[in-house]
Every structure is written in structure tokens, then in C-alpha cells.
Picture 1 (cartoon, rainbow, N blue to C red):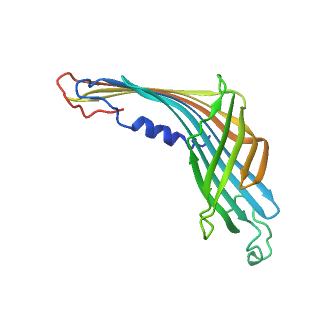
Picture 2 (cartoon, helix red, strand yellow):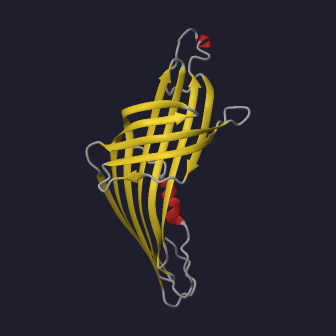
Picture 3 (cartoon, rainbow, N blue to C red):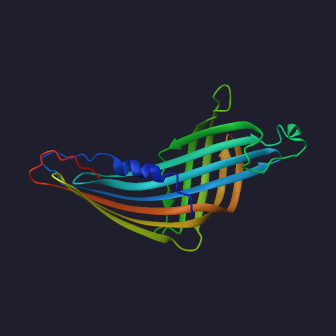
Length: 232
């Protein structure tokens, strides 16, 4: 099974946000269209294992009636470890397997900006260009570095489709009707991630994902209810 995209949580927060409507207009619609990409990358240089987790999003959302907004979001997580540290205490077993969690932690941090994901019309390619400040939580002085992302996703195969529809009736209040249409596919990732001046190059690395989410929701309140307790 494919693992969920990390930035999907951000989309769900947007969807769950209360609509800006007045009691005089109890009926409203909420719409959202967003695209996402994620990747888990790793590079081993001697004993230093660098793990990079990247996600990008570009979304259009809003209420009807109401303005339509556009929002980008880039997230990056960096983890560097000396996987040889402590090997002697392991009875001479040598270097730990990548991702095994052993060794001394050198860098551990998360960062986020509002840079948007770019993509082509059919979501066969996507790209992310951003410079993200990241604080090293593993350092004593809280060192901050700039992580520069220059990555491109290329779809592998085709996008799989998933659809859904939900109709909820609240007695005495009204109805909430929602629908979603999701496309998702595997992707390879190429490009560079530069951490504080040190560049890491990746060439057609497997394990990335591309996703498009289309979501719509409509609230229909009973005419006699001035302030319905309904939301998308």
C-alpha cells in the first residue's frame, strides 16, 4: 500500500476550517483543488547518513459565495547520523543498515515555507524550488541552516483514481453533502537538495508520489434555522 502524503493533513485542515457565512445566508458550498508531491531521499557518504523528507502542495480553495484563495506549502525534514558511532559497542558488527536508527545524531530539523508546487496539466511532472530555513534540534546552540530544494517528480505508469460521496442528514438542522475525486501515482525524483552549502544529488530515485485532490461540500440548512450547527 502507498503511504499517505504528508501534506494531505494540511489540505484536510483547510477543508475543516469553518466557512465565513452569515445567518442570513445559511446555505454555502466549499470547494478545493490541490496537488501534492512527496519524496523520501537518502545519501550515504562514508559513515554519515543523510535522510531528506520533502513534500510540496499547491491548492485552490474557497467558499461559495466568497473569494477563491490559492495557497502553496513546502515542507522539509532533515536527519543526519554518524552510523559508525557506537559500532565498537555492538561487538564489531560495523556500520548499521541505513534507516536502522543507530549511531550518533548530527542533524535533526523540520522547516516549512509557503512556496508552491509546480506541475504540468496532466500531473505527469511536478517540480519544487524553495529555500527553507531549518533549525538543527540536535545542536546545542540551535544552529539554523538554509535547505535549498530543486527537485522534479516524474510519474511512473498512470494515476489511479479514487472517488467518494457522503450525504449526512442532521435532524432539525439540515444536510451536508460532500464528494471527492482523487488521483494518485508513483513517481521518480531527480534533482538536488543543498543543506547549508553541501549539495546532495539524486537521479531518478524511486519512492516518490504525485497526487491531486478535488473536494466539494455543500451545506443546506432548514429555512427555519437561523444559525445551523452544520459545517463541511
